[in-house]
Structures are given as C-alpha cells and as structure tokens.
Image 1 (cartoon, protein in one colour):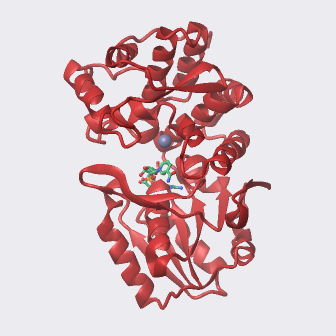
Image 2 (cartoon, helix red, strand yellow; image 1 turned 60 degrees about the vertical axis):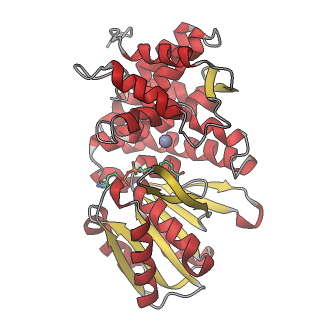
Length: 372
Ligand SMILES: NC(=O)c1ccc[n+]([C@@H]2O[C@H](COP(=O)([O-])OP(=O)(O)OC[C@H]3O[C@@H](n4cnc5c(N)ncnc54)[C@H](O)[C@@H]3O)[C@@H](O)[C@H]2O)c1
Ligand SMILES: [Zn+2]
C-alpha cells in the first residue's frame, strides 16, 4: 500500500492507495477521528455495487446510507438540503462524519454537505472513478453547480482521509476509465516527464483494464496534485497549473451543453488546443505536441472533433464562453501552456485570435505516427 500525505499543517491527511485495501476502512476512519453516526453518501450506480460491503465493514458505527441518483445534474443545491435533512434524521452531530463512496459528483456533493452541515463536520472519501481517485478527492474543493454556472457554489473543505482501492474500478465503464486518464496525462504534462513517458508506454494495457498497470500513475498523480495543493491550497497562483487544458475544455463542455463529451474527454481536446497554442506561441516544439496527441489517442481519448461535429458556431461560442470562465481574471484570458513535456508556464497575454486558431488543431486528424 502507498500513502500520499497532503501536507496542510493541522489539516493534513493521508491518501491510502492500494489494491484490495477497502477492508482497512475502519482503521483509516478511526485514525482520522471520525465519530458516529456516519452518513455514507453514494449514487444509484455505485451504491448497489459497494455500499453493502462498506456498511458491513463499518459494523461498529451506526451508518445511514444516502443514495443520490447518478449523474452530474444531481450536483445541485437541493441535494445539499436533502442530505442535511437525512443527516439530521440520522442523528449526526458535530462529531459525526460523512463518507463519500463514488465518483467526483458524489465526492463534491457529499464534501459540500459536510462542509456546511453544523458549520463543518469531518468527511472521508472512497473514490470509485479514476477522475475521483487522481483529481477530485485530492485538494478539498467541494461544491455544486448553479443553473448559470458549473461549480459556482462551493467551499474548500479538506477530507480527513482518502482511501483509494484500485479494485473498485473493475466495474467502471471503460469510457469513464479513459476519461480519467486525461487527468493523469495532464499531471504528466504539467509536472512529470516520467509520468508522461509511463502513460505513453503503458496506455494499451491500462485501457484494456489492467488495474495493476494503473496503480503507479494513480499514486504519482496524487503526489503531484498533493504537492501543488500543499503549496497553494486556495488557488492564489500555482494551483492554477492544474487547470491545464481546462480553459479550452470547459468552453468545449459548455458549448456542447455537457452532453457530447465526458469531462476528461473535453480536457483531452483542451490539451490538444493548449498544445497547439503553445506551439504557435513558440513555447513548445511540435514534436512534444505530437507526443501529447499520440498519448491521448492511445488512452482512447478524442484528439479532434468527431466526424460531422465541427461547426464554426460551436467554436465561436466556446471562445465567447471563455470570458465567463470563473478563472478569467479582470477579463484577461489566462492560459497554462507547456514549454516542454513535464513543465508549464502561465500566460495572460494570449489574444482571442490565437485562441481561435488553437481550436483549428481539432479540425485535423493526423494518422498516428507510431508503429502499432
Ligand atoms: N473537486 C474537485 O477538485 C474536482 C476535480 C475534478 C472533477 N470534479 C468533479 O467531478 C465530477 C466528475 O467526476 P466523475 O468523472 O467521477 O463522474 P461521476 O461521479 O458522475 O461518475 C461517472 C459515472 O460512473 C459511475 N460510477 C462511478 N464509480 C463507478 C464504479 N466503480 N463502477 C461503476 N460505475 C461507477 C457513476 O455512477 C457515474 O454514472 C464533475 O462534477 C467535476 O466537476 C471535481
Ligand atoms: Zn478536470
């Protein structure tokens, strides 16, 4: 088992990562001083698969299972009210804890409920998607969407413990697994050439579901994110590098009404755009941009608009939407751009024309350059 520590002074916590380690949950929770009664928050896909097992492991606690319908549209304020009602009915108090069992949606909603219930109670995460294991369960961002904007209502609330059991991914649909790989490739691109190389070489077994091959990149991703978060918990500056590919990605997600692409798929397209922008700005060599594209493609992620999709209107709308991105500061578009594999810089001097041109990268569909 690997342990990654998120070093935040008195709010530090451990991420335990391994295969078949779910049984360690009682020890993990007691080390994190989680008292009962506990609320186990899950969704309608994950609950039937794993909630019974988790409840059985927690036989020493009074456990209240709260099951949300699965899906991003459940990330809304009304579910916080519903959860807090369940917590009150279950007798949770200031010493109680919330355990999130599921993907990023469950983690964000359960975390925000824990952040606000009785002005904040402890919570722990058992992430069951790759996105949640390498991204959403690390760093303490919790929240819900508003009809006018995604992730616009939320709080920083660090978990007290995170338990990552790789075997929980066995039931994850392959498209969801591949979506999560985008965030791992992103971590390689922003901070670690060795992680990028590993993904380049091992994408094939990983997309076939070889979870042993996925363990090291999950550990490494958690280390990278934990390190960035420890230096800049509230995103004053450095933490923004984790948004690599996301300015373009969010614009693509909103322009397609969150229905066409999974988050990681949109981020993969966003990294292609950011890579092209970096090449056009003479920051990145074209060979590195090609390697990024081939690696994402090997992870079964989209690297161009799907056939028949491309429409100038969608791109125009995407460019316009970037202005509304909550990460845009004082109207200036900020971009995280790679200057080599494993390193990024932040730039605030990018013109709209450069942005529009970067989207052009998604028109082309070059054949893979590597022999297969
Ligand atoms: N807080 C953060 O820092 C942060 C970071 C990244 C993403 N997010 C958020 O995370 C959300 C996306 O997370 P996600 O990609 O995990 O989506 P998700 O939570 O919707 O899960 C994807 C789908 O897989 C199902 N599922 C989950 N685990 C499963 C398993 N083991 N077996 C079978 N089915 C399973 C879910 O029910 C759902 O249908 C977005 O709302 C995003 O904003 C937050
Ligand atoms: Zn992301």
